[in-house]
Length: 514
Image (cartoon, rainbow, N blue to C red; front, side):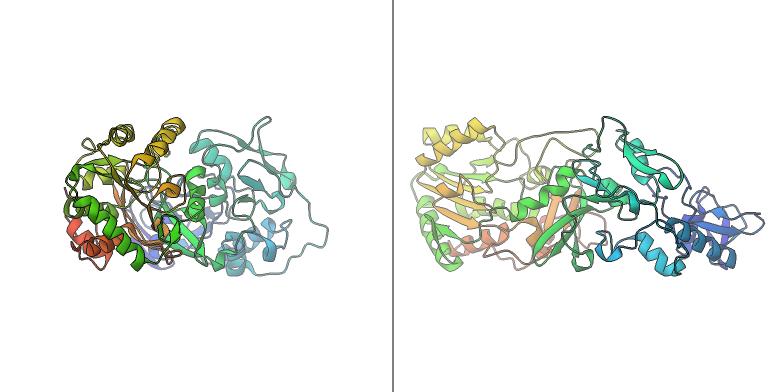
């Protein structure tokens, strides 16, 4: 492997490593705009120029590969002068509107100006005015006057989505990003262009002027929009999710996520069930637990225990499902289990999966197999025939069409007892004898298993809203009230029992125990 010396630091790197990557391994930052690790390398911004001993000109670090014995300087006088010159050219027509720019706080141009330039503009003429707030697509707006023409967005549409909506028009200081005639930036991953834009040229409509980024707290989480389980930064302010951003994971979603999944955070705060309810009356947890214990206890002690049905949700975490399994077996003593969840939807050959549930594979792992679980059509028939007279449901999603869902809603009138444990109000919660508020994934921690069998941890972002509790804690409360305690205090205790291998975040991702 070649050895290279960067700023007097000698390191050994893999053959084919670029100077920029080698410098990063040696602990030195080389500023760059056009370079992105998942895209081709045009070397057009010239911000990453470095000095190589023996080379007549400065070399672009993003493009040039190291050779054995190469000596590189990233902070020499020539390099510093080049960086200042590049930034001066980029800022020549750039508006000085950082205080009102939506990218402020996470803008590479802003950062590099302070770190590598910090000089007053010498331009004394009027700046060239370009288009502002241009609707380049349904989810993305374009500010031409802020654009530095790095072409990251163009290359993303060419190389990642293959949709080729964007191009560069005009020349010189009149050049701008545009869509081809008759097109708009409307591919399913369009907001990724705003993610990779190093400045404030491309911004997402949903987040534009919504919250200053330095006010946000970021929590590592997993998107619940489909079974792909894209890794995300869940960014929140004052106990409210403001946006999702993709978090790099080469095994799952690389640097990307779809627009639909990105906007799925809105479900977290939509029409939440925040108080325990008994026949429409709000109670505290103590009161509703006593009521639930009496009603469930009467159903369990009946002559025909087989009348108790339980709907499992693939929207819940593995930890929630593990407690659901113990609850059904040890407390309810029923094996009449049915599978709920969202119905299938759009799928592509990139990240979006038809299965819109984040943890269907987790259900299979916890309950040994999906085959023994009945579907909703079977449940409807069992309710209508009287085979199921008491029903306990996790969440309100049903993998059926509208007419079948209405048939299910009508069948609920035949039940002696309906207990719902869910995040949201719905047409089902209005018919529930007991409605118990459950947390969203942003308010608890746990594990999802994606379509490919990869178990992924997500962390709690903020405190539960209202009186909502994680599913597993609700099961514990009811089990205690029914004199069959399930004794856990923390999630990690469930994980130690549930998983074959340790769940330390620094270790390999575990596989659910069978």
